[in-house]
Amino acid sequence: MTTVSYTAVELIEIKRDGGVLSEDAIAWLIDAYTAATITDYQMSAMAMAIFLNGLNAGELAAWTEAMLHSGDVMDFGEISAKKVDKHSTGGVGDKISIPLAPLVAACGVVVPMMSGRSLGHTGGTLDKLESIPGFTTALDPVQFRNILREHGLALVGASETIVPADRMLYSLRDATGTVPSIPLISSSIMSKKLAEGIDGLVLDVKTGSGAQMKSREMSRELAETMVGIGKAHGVQTLAFITSMEQPLGKEVGNASEIRESVDVLVGEGPDDVTELTLVFGEAMLEMAGIEGGRATLEKAISTGAAMEKLIDVTVAQGGDPSVLEDTSLLAKARHEATVEAPRAGYVSTCDALAIGTVATRLGAGRLKIGDVIDPGVGITVEAKVGDQVSAGQPLARVRYADEPGWEALREKLASAWEISETAPEAAPLILERVE
Image (tube, rainbow, N blue to C red; front, side, top):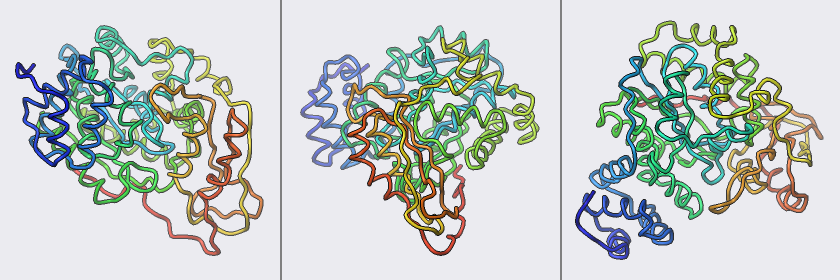
């Protein structure tokens, strides 16, 4: 901890004016924010200054280190198997971590997965998991260690003792329009991951309409930044840049994405979600030194071992396994509506941003700190790019709690689809590999 004292205002002014913060100043800032001697509105101003002016390489290294050491750094050295994790920068319908973690754990990879909550229009793994009644992601270090040792998997979030600075800043960014910042994203993700004591990390960097990074160039920069941070800390790190022009899978929402994750683990998931799960799983097996690749993963699905692993960890973390055994028991909002195709043709656009924004505003995400997420709100995407539709055919089915709220958003959701006379060319799901 730094022994030099600063003031929040002077540091905000330095970064506001394009200056460079010293390593000592950054350490003081993060320490003070974690101790609540700096207010949320002051850190909001700093986050906006960073959003606008960035951090140079030295500042980013110092910021990540300060975040990492704001709480406990886990050491699972007593677990001999390789510890490998995966993280996504966030996308609409991106539930990949939920089937992936138990799948690779069932194959022998130890996965200390620390995830985040919803950010802007993108859903959060923790919010989805907590739509399982009783499931707690707020584990202290002893609980984290015990569950990981017993099951080879723990699904947790930043807490009072594990990267607490990220837990605080994460919610602040979500409510202040400062999410799509490469320094803030990379330091947030990598501080959580490095705190897990992992040997390897697979990153899914989304790009496109529904991603935080809208351009391929920004996504590549983010991928390279995080790979560099990982390698600098001795962690084998690999990033995939993947498309987020349309939602992943069919389901957007918290409980509904748990349903779709279960579908993947029983071999009935949508092609895109299943493919990414297997690609990332192969990379994680390789990092862990486990042979067999895709065949090993597919066997864990077909034998039921992957599904059994999710159920076991759910029970260990206080969740009700009955909703996984019968997903119709998961929450569903009381109202349902349908968005229909205005004419016949081929879907040429299925805009992830519009769909994610509507889901968030209906209650599947947060508009401000403290908002309570409705796990039963969801959108089922019935037609995606390349699909042929007829006039009046459902494009989406929407589950919502608030009738006036839905009516105000109906046209916005309908605008997510464009119908053309000719079928569009198929676009790749995986765009680049960065290592």
